[in-house]
Amino acid sequence: MATSPSDPFKGSSTRLIRAGVAEGQSQKLRTVGPVLQRASTVILESAASLYDETNPTYGMNTLSVHDALRAGLRELEHANHVALFSSGLAACAGAIMAVVQAGDEVLAADCVYGPTRRFCDGLMKRFGVATHYFPATATAEEIDALIGDRTRLIVLESPGSITFEMQDIPAICAVAKRRGVLTMVDNTWAAGLLFRPLDHGADLCVHALTKYVCGHSDVFLGSVATNDSALAARLNSLVRDTGISISPDDAFQAVRGLRTMAVRLERHGTSGIELARWLAHRPETARVLHPALESYSGHALWKRDFTGACGLFGLVLQPAPEAAVHAFLNRLELFGLGFSWGGYESLAIHCDPQIKRTAAPWRAEGPLIRLHVGLEDPADLIADLTAGLAAFSAAA
Ligand SMILES: Cc1ncc(COP(=O)(O)O)c(C=O)c1O
Image 1 (tube, rainbow, N blue to C red):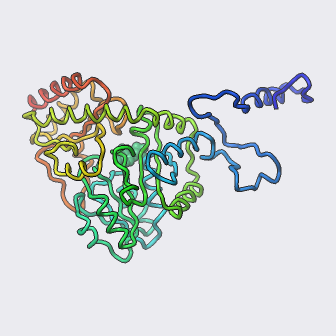
Image 2 (cartoon, rainbow, N blue to C red):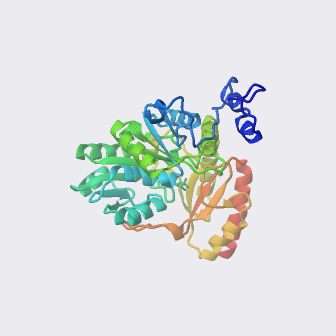
């Protein structure tokens, strides 16, 4: 469609609109990354193909970069089907919405991501779906006893992303399967790579790609993976019916992030363990909540099922007033004070104000800090924490 001297159209606006289109679509060059098309409208071959549903007729989630991302995530999650969502939270909400209907009940671990809990207790409740919470370390047998006639879905997150409790995912999934109940795991901590819930019997695996897949704290994306084609059809219709649309540029960033995630994650993991071990011996520390530490209560489950750790863990400080916590956080220079995690930079937050428990109270010796260990040099991070802990002690 490129204009040429022989193009019959003479109007300068028309010629500007047509110039270069054919060149842009010829894709003669092979590139390392996927082709990045930006499009809402797809130009169809013929009048008959306008309503031919066997091929994409609209650019929403159907461009080549979306296909490239889904292919990468199928590989990552060991999944046959992946649905894309515009954030990790949208993926959590989407997975739940795709499978429940009014009158159903959801059982959820008390430690699930706070906004997922807010979605269940707010919007889902308004739509006639009740959520009941069980203690974050409940056994499969204890969860079995809570399953009722209306239970449709069990929502798990192991380790919990604020408080790091571990659940026995394979055992809980086995019980759920026997009772005809679906299971969904928010697997963001494992980044899809360090633990694969679908291999362990989960029906739906949710991943906030915002974290390690995108990896640079500049994109929101989420995914839900499944090996069940009926669930995949439900997810696809939810995405279609609600108009959830993934920007091709964001999808491109996620594809790019997937290529390097394994090496980044290894560095996050080893630095995180180094800092966790160092913190465990500090006098200001009451407890370190890191699944890879032998001393941690959930360590055996982590060792059995996971192949590594990411850079996110918890630090319970010795009892101290809030002013000491603020002194600690405000003294940090390399650890930014910010929510989210999975980017290349280190982050710290004070968690107590956001911990919500209804099944069993959260018990800790002192204030809870969550650290995300980035890709900086561990020695510099330790120096930063040393200064922060000195400020903590001075204010305690
Ligand atoms: C465990 C977990 N799941 C889901 C999400 C939501 O991801 P997003 O920020 O992309 O909505 C987060 C975000 O912090 C999270 O920590």
